[in-house]
Amino acid sequence: MVFHGHSVPAGYFKTPQVNTLGAYPNLFLKKLKAIYPLAVVNIIVTAIGGENSVQGAERFTQDVLIHKPDLILIDYALNDRSCGLEKAYLAWNQMIKQAKDHGIKVILLTPSPDQSVNYADPENELKKHADQIRKIARENQVGLVDSYQAFEFLYPEKEQLSKYMAQVNHPNELGHELIANELMKWFQ
Image 1 (cartoon, one colour):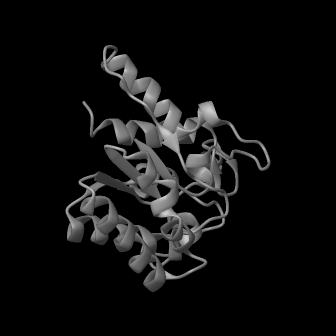
Image 2: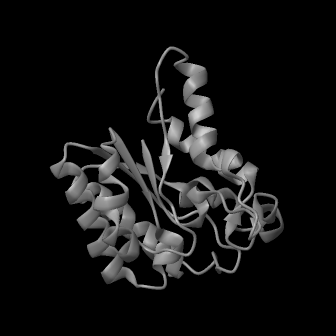
């Protein structure tokens, strides 16, 4: 399994600290191995902090497909606000098409929280990206892990949300645990 994305799957907590083992790809692996102790499961994280999906699509063949994974998980929405919905839509679809052309299954992740977002605004930029990723998953008939929705119970109260965050836009281990739990729903 290859986890492709930005700083969150890479394990950035409070920058510059990178907590690889406390990030959701490795928390997920630990949970998966607890259920399937006889399975050989390997994960590769090709995530780069600060990167958006346009940049991720550019290196998809050389950094992701080269590993010949059975499953690719894509998580770029937090940083896709910098490139916009239209460019992100094209990049996500390009990566999905390339994966499917190689017979690889795909799971998309909606964005984890950013404490600077006004979640009371139903038109906030992060929600627009989450909605677009849900649409892309439906259109391409691929899996979806709705991180945005998993944290929704925390959005009304910033103080509660901060308990799940290492810094403004990076979850702490408790936050990563929420994402790993959502991922596990595909494997139980």
